[in-house]
Length: 608
Image 1: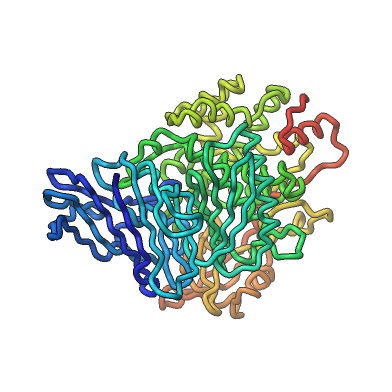
Image 2: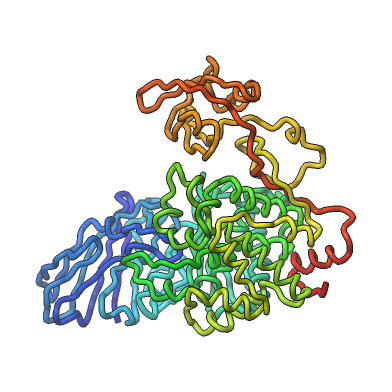
């Protein structure tokens, strides 16, 4: 047994105190280390940099230690139990790290629990303490970790099977809102921290339908005592991270549904999609997983070319589950799908990097995006979702509706997930071909290992869904449902500089310069502060109108600051590229197309 004790030592200073007791330390000198990354987020984060102090003692005497690298320590030989005490600075308000202040505490085990080398497979016991002082008397605790005597939602003793299990259960403490619902006889809890005014009943009712939909797809819920949604409601934020029996989420408080408001807002739809995504990971990633991630050492990168499947397929099913479960209408789902297509087409990086390469390079490119990212990389989330869509439709078409990607996921669960066997890099494609009975090598060569645009229109046409790409109409234009009226920009496309911008006070700052656009051709660069166009000051509100006054083919004068130097550019605005997707349910389609659409969007097996 490896014993840990963790205490919010000073919420005001954002410090956790952690004590690690090793009953039988290595007689040659004990090594301990903190992970460099957290599973599910493929970036080196160097959590050990937040350790402020670290000491060790045995039988009341100090034990000297040596730091071997950025995250590993080795302590001298000692005759008895070794006790390591250290403080962790916790000021990362995200789903990946640790955060502590006077309002709440949160941590992932990767941020606070040192690994004991040579004893990774031993059971762990964790004593989680309440902060000292009357201010914190009403704090409660939420975690999916197994209780070893602690009352539900209380501080005390918790346990884990081994170190990997220990770091897979995030912990939230403080004053929070709590609600429960059951799915397949398993309690599911929703804990919301932060100021909010949510309709918890509606959240639970909708999540129950979404969770049931995913369970129906796989045929069963993985074995667990309960599942926990940990939600941090903030003014502005978005993200999620999957765990074996829980998920950590962060969202805008305004995205959560308000009491006595029944309509489906865009923000709440996005929140449900996030919950759906992380819940699908219960199967796809946490149990169906690449062998390279299953065997990963958390002190260095673990490279796999399969994130397009594990994140992309999950991104396909997250929104699909919303319409299959009845939480949103078909038209709402098409709007979400169109936005995914738009996000892929908005970057020329899709023509330079494959999703297999994007997966492999996640550590250095996807998770470390810079101002040139739209021109250089493609998201394995979004393009992976579109690949999953095409795969699903190909299998349905070729099998005349008797098979689908759903059957592939069930086969992966039966062969790998339930047995806890990791997938080798080539086995995903083999399983898909075996289940579908289709030779898909050319498809995978093009869609997964190639950089060509996916041919989406024919696949959607067979479902009675219209598809088109049109020019971008402005900063808020993310695509979606096609307008009923004829678009004016079909004949007079909008003129653009080919940049993305942000505002800094009153300044308009260029964040991205897109390949082959007017700004790039003229020499404008990311970081430039736009001052004036043709002698008129540029603001966020008037920038589009100033550019629109340009005559097609005629240059305009753009003044900008680069660092502290005034720059003058002659820019010829170009027509907006057709990279915004619109989808719509076509009228007058034949019954066969309607049957295919129903089978797809309702998860039914309908022969076509």
